Image 1 (cartoon, rainbow, N blue to C red):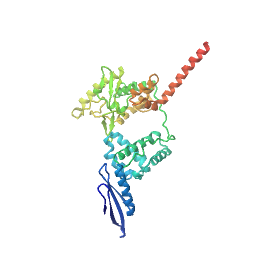
Image 2: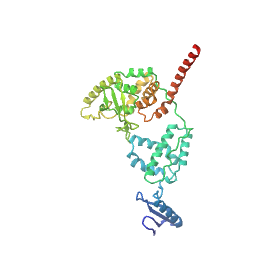
Image 3: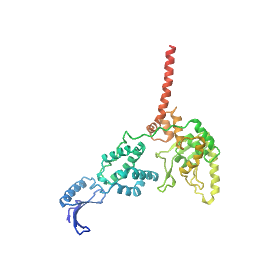
Image 4: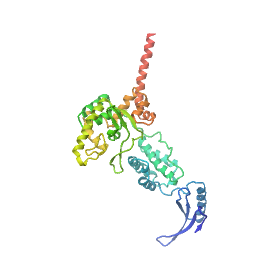
Length: 387
């Protein structure tokens, strides 16, 4: 073995016998990464190639750069990253979403590439391939976000010099999902009437009058609600564990809390809901698991949104409700944008930026623009006729 000075690495000769008895000689280069302290290895068929690689690796080490990009494939890195690192700075529900996107859309295409072989061009090609398959814009974007998060940790671990997925845009040709048509006032009234006096009354009223997400409503605690002054501090959401179990998160989807005013009707319904929760607590007895929730399960634990949607489905069918709970959010957005500044509506919905509200509900603003144009037209032509 040819050893170098400390930090410069080494070259060693390895002999491997094949099944037929032939010997294969390989030259292994090993250099210590100065930042992580980990030994990086690479193999070569010729000693001259190994010596050239050692010089390059030593130079990179002196410059403080990654000595040798990880030779592992993207698939093997993902298999390591998901269980060991992805959840350190992310919610379990986010990790589950990343895992699905990576394994469904990313790895089948580029999972066999080595990390050090990935370039922005390969990622860009992936985005165009997903687009050609007819996947929606949101699906393509979600896949790129998951890949960028995965490779960001690879960069932080000095496995690669840069993140090739950073800044890759979704192709313009990507299919856009159709604009959601918000429910009418009459449709909302019909659902509220149908749920009055049921277990879903307070939940539906809270959704229909605040525009909150279903996960935020199911995670609401009595300590968050001031019924005397009609205020709800939205500060968390329901999240799903890797196993799919509903758990109480520590923050909202965007990470920001917000104060939401409650209508008189919502406050009255919540007072009745508090009595209903007390009845559930007594019925459960020692099985009760206290979480201080407004809408707990029969034993006090957080509810899975799918179970609540299942209970709501017969009412939706009977009243002709055209979608899911999320349509209440669209309803509140349409009402707000018809007469209030976008910044006010964004704050109500829990969007970090007003631009996000415009991106999601911009089609509603277009309808308002038509109304404004009609008003201006009537005013202008009235003035012309009277002059």
